[in-house]
Image 1 (cartoon, rainbow, N blue to C red):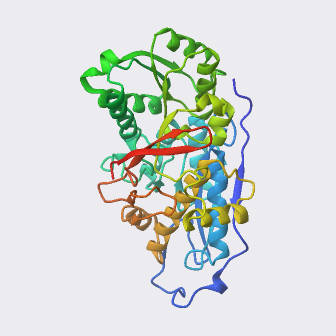
Image 2: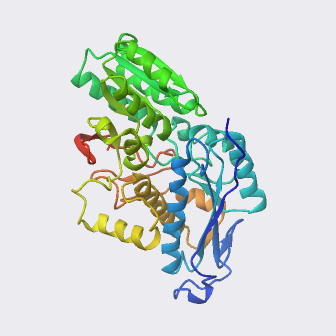
Amino acid sequence: MMGPIRRKVLKFAAGGALASNLPQGLARDAASRYGPGASDTEILIGNIVPYSGPASAYGVVGKALGAYFDLINAEGGIGGRRLRLISLDDAYTSSRTLEQARRLVERDRVLFITQVLGTAPNLAIRNYLNQRQVPHLFAASGATLWGDHGEYPWTMGWQPSYQSEARIYARHILETRPAARVAVLLQNDDYGRDYLRGLVDGLGERAASMIVAQATYEVSDPTVESQMLMLRASGADTFFNIATPKAAAQAIRRAAEIGWRPVQYLNSVSSTVAAVLVPAGVDNAVGVISAAYNRDPTDPQWQGTPEFEAWLAWMKRWHPGGDLRDNLNVYAYSVAQTLVQMLRQCGNDLTREHVMRQARNLDMSLPMLLPGIRLKTGAADHFPLEAMQLIRFDGRGWARFGQVYGA
């Protein structure tokens, strides 16, 4: 059982109000329109991530978002307005997520909430934020639910959907090992079931015969040892690891310890080298297959490129405590750039309605996305990213192979 939940408030800003440093042509006038959390000098943004609890590896995202906003503030902010991030801890507990969302909206009065981590935590706040008409932007979850723009027009995802990712793995299994016997470990919630649905759909009529074992775990479980023993006993030769970092690392390590050596597929949310593959033992992870849309910071092919060097310079100057091997720092960098572009498109209309309008009007390349992948949204498209490429861990980093799917 988890101990007391620690409230963590991170306020990221560089310097004070920047109204005196406004670029010419952006003077405040009667045309400026503001919603809660916005003013002539500041844009207040809410964020909820697990800085504690079983998914605390994702706390990196909140810290990195703030570090990127520090860079933007040092350059003059957005239209002379500094970005201020209030980043709160929910310990990956849905009831706590709702408490923190209420605080951000009703007490802190943020303009919008972004990058809430996890399917269940985002589900816990979706109704509340849509009823209050607060933009619920770029959920840090690939749940297919975030595409329901008709019923929940104030909610939007960011990364490719879990179902589309799992269908890529299914396609690869069918193409390379059509007689595979597949075992699945999944977190016992909507996140895990979403990935499983994509795998079943991707395998089609062969799913019933190919998936020979399934084992679930609770996010609060201390280990997944018993589940891994059960999956090995099924005789499966292929393993789909649908787990968040702690359990994902345990599963990879335990498979090696018990002498089970299936072909392993790892969901992309746990493909970070620092938080998953190093704890699992990099030798144990050699050959693991995943999928990516961002450039892997450990891949030597990117080193020396302008895109990588700009990311590296940002890390060293603004996020020096961040792990250069952790692709969550690449992820947060790309999300932050998306947010900055959206806010720049808002101009001097910083109402919640206009923020949502601009979130649906994005068409951009991001420097740390893989070649061939572009971010785009629309009135009926709440999945900004829809393309991925398969990657395989070689003991040092992730190597891309095959085509880009969904581009």
